[in-house]
Image (tube, rainbow, N blue to C red):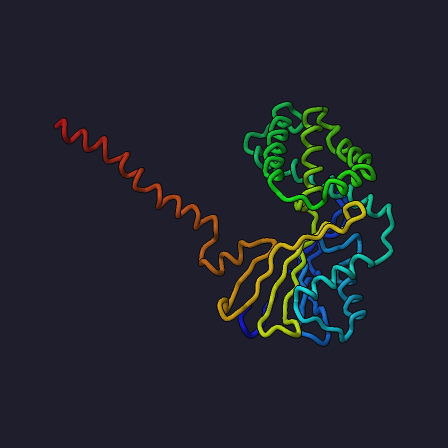
Length: 303
């Protein structure tokens, strides 16, 4: 974006459905106008649904409901959209319960999938003790990372979530990990799941929301980015990730959401993996040269 406007771009591939019943579509629309009257747009990525409602349906109904209404700032457009979400659709307690279970399953499935990728070359049998040890180590590493994050729920909110959904969380963990028959794995996986639910951390099946454009009082465009897992218990879990305003001091900005590799390739002229490998080689070259030079120098002195 620059002082004149914002250009949003997205592919058309998206995943919909619950864990174990997911489908991928190649013709999904991720870009919409948030208003037919005012210059504000919305882009979604990740999960293409909100509590089993397509984001496209949610946005179109919001746009129809608000009609010509405007807000002075893009950030206020975002807040109003999320207020609308809190009252959207016929979302009953059983739907919220199901969503919590799906979040738990996605966290554990991602842990298993990432561990399989890491040990693929060594090919240990998946239910073996060696693989379980890798799972436990990976889960402990993630727990240590999540520990430093800020809580989304306060102490009373965490107690209420456990009181209302503790059995569902435990059953989902047991359902996924019973194959491994490891109490140690179940304990560390439970800790990982609870941290994922309690903290400002989102599951692999979360949705990203980007709202961009001009508020009625804004001379330059603004972009705001939020993540959401839908309802976690009785609360709508939504966290603001960043807000970027074009100004006289910041005349332009390029941002990537979800997958950043193509944007980095466009901006840097090289894939990030290639750039990092090249930088590592350049930085380590003097040391490699010195190691090769010393034996030759010693041999010359002996002659």
